[in-house]
Length: 427
Image (cartoon, helix red, strand yellow):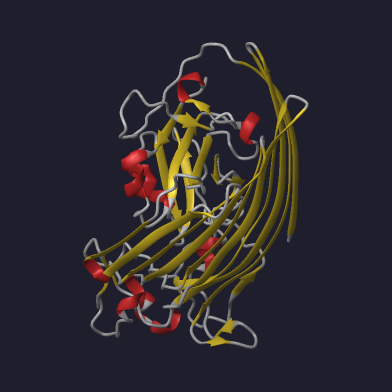
């Protein structure tokens, strides 16, 4: 499936007094000016006519230790995150937003990383490291942020190379053999060139116990409770090409090589932090995320010119025990399993012109994107034939997914599988 998106936005904004709500955790003191880019240009937050939250300073420095971007909601009010399939995150602002496990289901809160729009909810579960601040805009942002921003926008901004940038290295160890190592180093190579390299490694053993709820059937491995094994690296180079011209190059790469946790089956009598599954559905995760961007700012005949060219993509392979039990209806041959194999690539170009006269601020923008998405979605039960991708039993959950009367297994279930390029949404 190939999706093509293009949009054009033109807007004139009068910079007059308006109500502003902003929170910041900058530890330098209240006298310091907090600079934000909520209106797509750097300015003091007191001058921005919008309702937004800025997370920066010491408090957000701790957010770089979060397991994923969804945990930033712990620092916010009116913002929630719904997580599906382990890593797919749909943010909701003021209760507005869709919750769905399908990668292309649009949300109502647009998520950006360093100015680049993340088009699928697979990308929004960001692996956070060396992030300088986050800006959360509440309420419709379609004029400036475009597509899928009816509830608001969330913008994560990483540290830039600069003359006075800091370097650091930290490591921690915790429960469940949690290991978290992160660091960054920056250097000014010349009067016009600065570079920065940042990275993080994170691993953690299962936090859910896989117990044997039914002694008549063997339980699967402990890894069914979810294993984290991730790393990420980001490089950036800032070139001051002229008095009013800067060019910023960024490139990043992240991997997730753990095990996706099996779902909890609420019909089983297990404790809150327990699961009970067999071993047939436990699958290794092989996810990689990558991207590169070129951001340029300059001036032309009194206009501030901004250009952002970006490529983002991912390859994702993961799965899990779909029924969340050792043996549905007491029959281990009916165990259902799920697997995703996704490939996504997006290329985008944004250009903005801005100029101010006294109390009038004019912004003209053009943004275009091309996206390519492919997905194999497979559900099977019993033994999977690798040639035909068909299991040797009937998938007992199929009647419930298509609106049938219940999920009881037939007396003699025929071979059945579900393989779709784009599966229908669940009921």
